Length: 377
Image 1 (cartoon, rainbow, N blue to C red):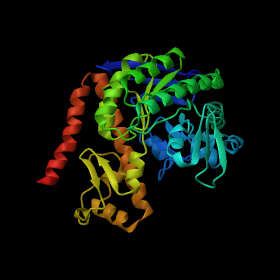
Image 2: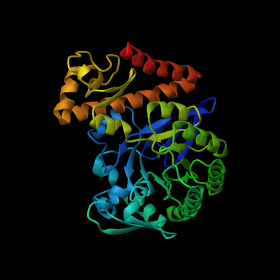
Image 3: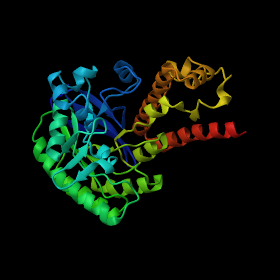
């Protein structure tokens, strides 16, 4: 194991890359999907299950953890890795996205964001320096800069203002982060759906010589075509020897399309949230197990999957659990969904290494579409 943070590209196929991020707590194989552990847990999953599915890194949420149980308390208790029994890499977001959703409870200025807790109404200041301090107290391996995220569509003036503020905050975060061997701070490219602002943001962040770069402010209301266009706009301006992270994305199709455009890392609550609400992702597309048509379907979700949730339990039983509101249903469907996402990432890595990414994407999408046609027949 290394005592430094490094990223190497092992193979490329078009703009897509497969490689490894190496750091003291482990190796992250890319392209990588990071299960979201908002409050120090990937909901409805044991940590050892998450690792067994193939996840190399999970995401923790700065906003939620600073409010409960509190960053200083986490540090006193040995850090987030020890608390949640996850000895592997953890990436923490900066809290900026959650603050965006608190428009009625916040005041934003150059200093940072003053906001009221959604839990008890208490007032907090999240500055760039405090965001980095909190992430350090949590013990995060990859820390994100504090940024202002604007929900799309938005006026160009608001998008530009947020982008420029995010750049100023990035510089302050870089100074606050300092030199932490084996850890990394990533900058976040902003600029909404305006190509010129995206390019300006990317170039300015690259000048800061950070260890990785994220594309933020997407999957916030814009159509997929806009998201992909912004990735294509930004990608040529990001260093090829540093990891690229598309924040908060997304659906399986979003991921395969973004991988083909050069993205290395992803996170999204979609597979866990969907699992808690009766929705599953499979090689045969997305299924809503609340539907009555599954009430007497004695077949498993996917007999070829290695995940017991997919190959062992019948759709009829899973339908019953979902309709009855049983916790086991949420656990099994989340297990299936995260298994599918990790299998998808493993397939993408293998396809890139073999130089057959577009064939793999075509075969994957055909599986989704065939199931749709079969259901319509």
